[in-house]
Structure formats: C-alpha cells, structure tokens
Image (cartoon, rainbow, N blue to C red; front, side, top):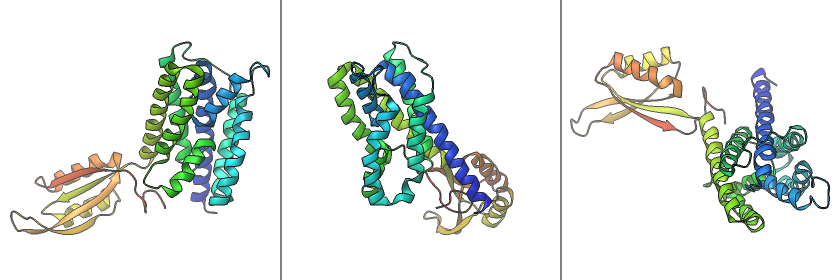
Length: 288
C-alpha cells in the first residue's frame, strides 16, 4: 500500500470520527433536549427514548436504538452492494453510537426552539457532510438514501434524505405538535444545504476559457507558474472570421486570481471567462 493511499485512508477515518462526533453532539445536546425530530434514525431514536422514559429510567439510550435499527438496513446493503462498500459505513455507525454514549450533554440553546433548529442543522449538516465526503454514510436513512441514489443517480443523497426525513418529521408532528415540526424542518433544510456545501466545497474548482492572441506564451506561463495543464481549442470569431486558439484550463479556487493576473500581464486584451466547476476527476485533482 503506497504512502498516498495510507494518508487517504487515515484522512477518511479522521473525517468520519470528526463528523460523527459533531452529529452526536448536535443530536444529544441540541435536538433531543428540544424534542426536535429532524428525521433519520437519530430522530427515531429520540422518539423511542422519550416514549420509553416511563418504562426505562431515562428511556432507551439513543445509541442502542440507533444500532438496532441499522442491522436490517446493513443486511440489505450487503446484498445489494457487497460488504466492501459498508466498511466505512459500519465504522461510521459504530462511531456515531459511541459518541452518543460518551459525549456529555451540553444544552446550547436552552428553551429557544429557533436556536435549537439553527444549531442542530449546523452541527448535523457539518457532520454529515464530512462523513459523506469519504463516500461513507452513518447508516440509517443516510444509507437508505445512498441505496436509493444507486438507482436514481440524478438525485443527490441529501435530497433523497430530505424526503425520507420529512416523513419522520410528520411522525414527530403527530406526537409533539405542528410547531415543533416546523422548527424541525428548518433544521433539516440547514442540514441538507450545509452537507451539500461541504461535499461540493471539498471538490470545488474553477474553469477558465481564455481567448487570446498569444496562446502559446500564456499556456507556457500557466504550465510553469501554476503547474496546471492547458488545452488549446481551435475556434473562429464569428464576427471577425479570425481563426485562433482558445485556451481551456481548470484550476483550484485559490489559483484563479493568479491565472487572471497571468492572462492580463501576457495579453491585456485577452477575453477571459471563468466558471464554477463542481467536481474534477484526474491528475492534480480528485482521483476516480
């Protein structure tokens, strides 16, 4: 196993550990004290805990319910995707239950439902985003959404989760009232947006199309100063009828400023188009 692969594996496990810790803290210290059912198996665990408080001192622990609910989902996932797919997910699920068991409960929002929804969405969205960035899930509706996304690839995992979680929120609305459900929806929306933002942000790049009279000189500058590849595309100005080479280059976010400066210094009259790139696979970026 190469050093690069070892570093990637260690990085993934550290992201899972950090992400599940944030999720557990958000669940136990923010959502559960406020009785906000935001979906997922953690949301179901909150319902079970509060409904069993009269039967079991303190109710059935969140960690126990989370593990029990995940067993049948894991069996289905193994059948559909194989055990290798679940290695990170099993680790993430165990870590989530572990953090739910050991992290102290520190109420951050008190009785303020709006702050609970905001803080809960931030903690959960950040945690889920870190876990998803490793191609893992935390089991539960995360894994169910990933399995559905296997067949419906035009939907993001977070979007599918939003639909599933809404159904769980409706159950929470039936038990705790519509007002609690409305606050829970705020938390779910934040969770979805933040997790999507983290996943996109970790792979976010910029693409530039440069129409210049000095393509060779500018390409040499970019390859030398930025160590990025440049592609020359034959093009024709439809107004002038002039044939020229348009340069195409993909760079990291922090490199786009230098790319524009190089274009301006090499050819002040260059026409530069910069656009966002959600994901790049290949040398110098993310490996497939």
